[in-house]
Image (tube, rainbow, N blue to C red; front, top):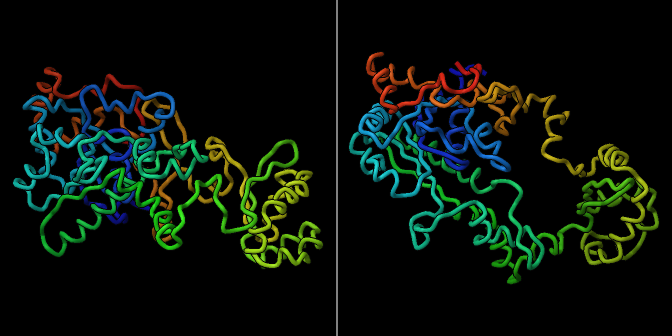
Amino acid sequence: MSESSLPYAGIRVVEFTHMVMGPTCGMVLADLGAEVIKIEPVAGDNTRRLLGSGAGFFAMFNRNKKSIALDLQTAEGKEAALRLIATADIVSENFKPATMKKLGLDYESLRKLDPRLIYVSHKGFLPGPYDHRTALDEVVQMMGGLAYMTGRAGDPLRAGTSVNDIMGGMFGAIGAMAALAQREKTGKGQEVQSALFENNVFLVAQHMMQFAVTGKPADPMPSRISAWAIYDVFTVKDGEQIFLAVVSDTQWAIFCKAFGLAELQGDPRLVTNNDRVRARDWLIPLLRSQLAGHSAAELGAAFEDNGLPFAPITRPQDLFDDPHLNGTGGLAPLTLPDGRATRVPLLPLTLGGERPGVRLDPPRLGEHTGQLLREVGYSEAEIAALLSRHVIADPAAEAAPDKSQ
């Protein structure tokens, strides 16, 4: 898909973001064609240096972006940022509420300079009693019911990925898209706000509504009464595990026939799905015994041949070798800022039958500083002076070049 054919080609975004939430918003817009300029401190976004579970953050959420490194605590750095903002359609940020205001880069300050500007703020909480608190994905999962639903009773457990950060950034991007559409009608920009806590509440809203409809609290997932009788992880031959599901009366008949379970198919206690749900206490142990001698591959093949839902228990690193992802182009080549080659998952959508791809690798710190400053009127002498005063970073000090130019 050519860059010019992408829906947000010609839209410029200037982002002041770090970690996951704000960068996700920019990544979505960038993947869809926007020119996204990441303004980093001269020392670089701290996310570049994270270890452990944060080691993949920068590479994942900063593709298709340009990097400029500015010291915003200096008048010269702030002036450069304002010149870039003057060329932008969207500003995106995810710092504490007071941070941008102290810099004079908050919405109220910037809208006076450009009433068409769209300003996206990613926060822990929308304005209200909690908005002074510091939020993290894990914080809002605990206070927003998600950790309760994921863990066993008495043992709250956060989800295994940054669900609120990622979805919060996605909702920020959706808000930006809505604001762009509104601007076409009114000629005016607006502020968009997205928040971790409210995102988490949206995720668990189905369980809130379950209580509203039934009057009964939702049980945590490990102890819930499933809506379907067979909807479990089974440990089978050689200790392998596989998730198997039989979610209708038609599927039950197919399942019984496929595995020679005629006596179960004819059991009057198991005629309907609800009958089988009520019989789970003795039915599931019986099925575990019946299936234990099969390998996970055999069970998967039988379920696939019969159109029944199943899933191998897959580790994230195994997905690099997933035949469907590789067969559909769902993993795109990517060069990391240190020059190593890898692959990265693309947005989970197609436009006209094509997946929006990687046009720019995650940038080296300040990689596009000179280019962007020239675009907004800086001379070579002025750029050299900013560099000598450490107002901007020297991209030559970074690792080996990548292919993003």
